[in-house]
Length: 255
Image (cartoon, rainbow, N blue to C red; front, side, top):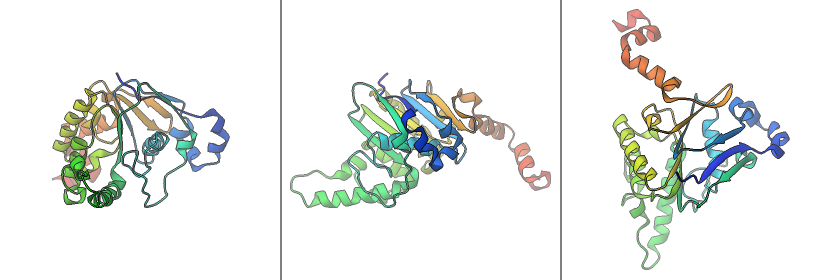
């Protein structure tokens, strides 16, 4: 496989500095040792606040991406809210280097779409330049639904031979569109791409031969798909929805 990032670990020489940061209060970050990225697709999973998105953001910024998302030539900032985790990470890169890359995060995608519009407007003032929108589905991302714009970006902007970091991409996607994303992801993997994805989606996590790292109070550990809480809870609910609703709402509320 092509591994543009082979390994991520905390820098030992920064240990005392990170201890003075709020990041030290996140168990998964505090107990982070070394994560080996040995598969084309790696999933980061865990409860809200477990540190998975913070970790992904740190990897993205340490790899040269804008903290709010985009490719490496995006340099906008609407709010300086990202952590300093990137300063404390050691990234072991593979050879060759990625020819393409993108950091996609659901929470700041609106800002990325707005920045694409600004760059398109700037290009319209230049002679003999093709439209930037061609790389994003042929129209402003704001002119498409949230889910359509996500899929359009991946279909048109992700070119292969790339490093792609996705933070909760399922936030904008229906179950059917999540399955479509799996197909797109597989096509890009076959074009020598590497994905690191923070997600809550048991649909996405089912991608075959992927590594799943769970972030929780005990640290970060690799877990088989069928042993993740996401799989177990979803399967239990779908197998016995009335029983689960009875437990959650009370038996009288499900009649």
